[in-house]
Length: 342
Image (cartoon, rainbow, N blue to C red; front, side, top):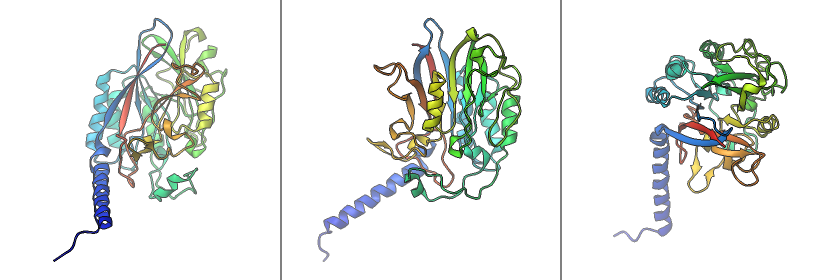
């Protein structure tokens, strides 16, 4: 006749069952529970009509992810004025057709983009413990190149503005919006384009042709299509776009007078603790700003003491690395930001 189960053993069994359940939820359920976040950003001049900005980030598409592709396509029904893609679009050499299908309905609208590290090369297996270090990058790993030049050409041919270390301007609902972006700071490829130059819309420069600059990797080319010239007085706001929200990049946007900065890269922490939030951000951004709308460098601009801050939106993104296909307490997401009069 067996005796009573030891309390420590009972506790260990319960903890193991809980861990197995959480792992199953994270890898089989939550990673595919795509969510649309809707955020209001009070930042426009008084009396202006709202502008809708769809923020796509970190799709990390793989062949066969039809549900994700269809979900991204359906976002076109939101009728945004502008689509902003902050990079890491794919994770496999054969994912190009799926990515183009996902983005196809959005390419008919004004858009802007930057690239992330996993637009250039496919992810490789890594020790997940490295993300707990202050700098998780480590030595470059051998990886498979992705056809990023073809991706850039497709987006530019559709009229989207390439913001890889560049500036531009788009016309949205009859209003000109100045744009500025950087290449991926996680690769140390960011070179902030100087203010006041010929491609700075606020100086009245003509940005209708080729823009100045390019990534350190040399994407080259111009950003014709989706941009136009005009006078500085026509520009209503400055929108910053980057992949990885490193502090030095956010400081540069803030110093430049950006009204709103959009970034991705963090995956919102990807594996979060309920009631605590993200454990890591995979960059030097603090954990409490791993996702969502915040102020930079201080409080939100609509709160006391935050009037000198820049709006910052960090997307938790829609995907994961194929070698860490799990999300916990951090659903994959896209965001519709509605810009409103302050």
